[in-house]
Image (tube, rainbow, N blue to C red):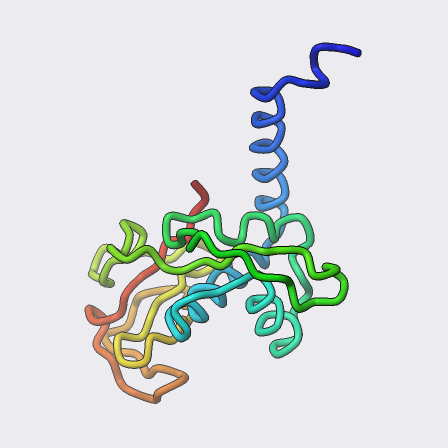
Length: 166
């Protein structure tokens, strides 16, 4: 038996490397995180099963694979301490975590202003009226119509998200 078989620090380091690789190699992660955020805003809590149902079954996207482990690795979410049995048959009723938005908000959410920019893949913004999450690719507009509630919202009233990894 070699010492590497029981090295906790090495295990944590390898976990970090694996999570980073999986999340960087999946372009759908930001979209799935936006779905998770919308579900948390709508229902107060969210699980990976909830995101799977909305993102894959309802919207027809492909699932994230290993990158799903990075779904809630953001300063937006915190674990409620609650575990529930997964509803997906392929998960064999294994327990999954229940997440919620952090109560104090987070530093990744702020109102759009004249200095707000969108990266190449776009930036998620939240409608202040109905809290729906939408993606924009530029901010050269003065007002935008929400696709969900149809309200015309001034640029500075939208909330911009910068969903990143911890």
